[in-house]
Image (tube, rainbow, N blue to C red; front, side, top):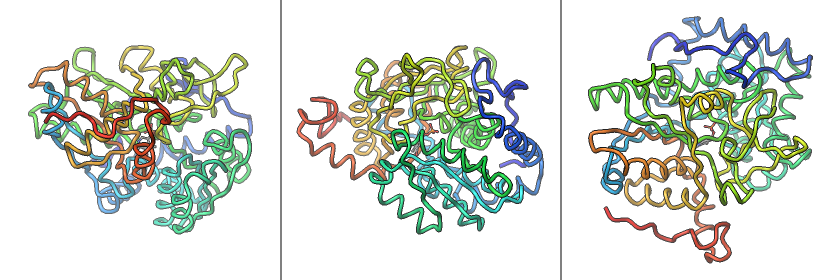
Length: 424
Ligand SMILES: *Cc1c(COP(=O)(O)O)cnc(C)c1O
């Protein structure tokens, strides 16, 4: 790893990617965002900060993560070679730790002794609490009452790591409400508090900063693909999209290549029970432009501008918006965004598990489904890299519950198979 963070194109002076992003926040938040922007600009060229981040990513997280040829999945699809970028190998089991460590380290550099974070299923909360414990920072995690009830184990994990978990009962008592509370806490306590945001969303500079921190994924792919295939750029890259951080982390290092040299970049959105069912989290396919958590983006809202509660089988994709840089990629055709349903993800999870011995997260399974479909349409000398954003240990109980439901009672009638059809 190098001693500089890569420099991809920055958003414009108002923090916007095209017409997306920006800072749609109350006046009181602007000084805090300005302070953060200055601190990040200084840190990303400071060898001391970069050395420490480099050391932690290597020795604490275990980077670089592998780029692994999935031979049986490739044979099953019968087309392009499918490679898995193994973010599931990271300590804490997913890509989120890359960003949390970098932000916590920045908090420390800024002299802030306290960090706050929002969490839905608890994955970002656990990663934030982990980074805070490691660096000796006080940590408060905001979590919706509904999510606290559903994610008992992660709540306990955060407490074990020394974090305080604060219950949020406003709105629908879920992730978007927890995010509002975390922002409120930050504004109130900005002198000693840093807000660790979990994806490429929120007001500028968060989307660009989180992208830079996650881009270690795609930068590693270049080196690894060169070693394995004799060229740095694969033919296609597929990643699942919640807020969009694992996807932007693997896309950004390739997105700014000139037309013709750029691989196909494909984000898979959670289509839940189908984009037409109204029960989904597909912000590009089924949303419209609006403002959420301080940024302009595609999101799920109704005619009054109210957020429609998203639905997905995977808690990590259950966010009603998609990061502004993805919105720009979509509008300009740099990347494509395709919907994948709950049932398709369930099948892909089982397929990957049985053929590769790797239990992926339900989020990741959305990307795997599309990668297999895509591979079929490509030649054997071509390559697809799937971002294996996380491991599925956290989802095993839920998968067990879903597979034991009679098909008629399941969330997607008749479409969940106890065994996928496996030919390989
Ligand atoms: C949180 C999570 C996601 C979704 O978040 P992004 O910001 O879109 O990457 C995807 N996969 C896993 C394993 C996650 O934990």
